[in-house]
Image (cartoon, rainbow, N blue to C red; front, top):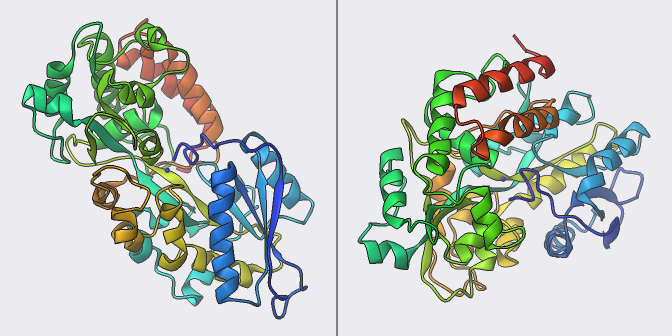
Length: 422
């Protein structure tokens, strides 16, 4: 789900309110629906364009868009809900079930059924990603799989065929070794970010949280996956070390290192495309390689309705339209993100966007959507992430290279904070 989704939400300077004009909704208090989102100016423009399209089609609706800084978004919307004035429509991502577990969101199953909205048909496997205790709490809005960026020129120079979804871990490692020039160029940008190494865990048949709601990071499958990812860095040295990245410049990670031709392959989200449209070297994208099976993370967000909304039917009517093919084309036409709607992902509007300056296989997103795994959006999401980040810090620095020891300790930390469902 974008770095704006999984949750690197881009910050806005303050709460910005925009109103789409229209007459009062029939049978309501007459005021506008309130819709809260996070983000920056590109997000504001894209959301507003979709809201304007909504009002044009349904003149009886009005929508007031509130843009809230990402770092204060959860506190702001929860305060609104606690005061009985929660947003009618609210953007959510990984912390969706922090809200759901506190009874702050309205279950959407009945409204979806009444509207004949089949989320699996419209969005594929991510259609039910925002579910909690067998109830749907948000409708996918933006959802793009993590993809592989590769330097076509470096691949051609070494006579390596382009990566595909059928690449195995061994195929990937062999290519990374060929593409690495010690101290100068590296085969891969690294897997230290959790959507990257989690993908390998699920590819290996493992889980982060099992089906009973218990932590499962110390399983053999998870340990083997993390060890493989770590070995790329400190054993095979096909990934830049923290020092290597620091030597490249301040705040440079895999995305910028790929753009600078320091790494030949990088696994990340849609957002990296914007920084590559004017590059001087040939590049393209591909699905993430596979392990024992295909599995990949996705980045994005959904639209939910707060429990305090007095306009739930109008709010769902708006969400249904905003996630329709008609409205979602605006997401890609503005280059904002990947629309969750599969029809749009497979359309010319997405496959050949007007702003694209080079030949890129955008069909990779729709292809990858078929094997997106369902991440565990548990109520303790933030605490889980903090425990993992702390527990894996030395591992990614190469100070502790035994994945079993590291994940055994992380498992204990998670067991102390996660309430088991079983």
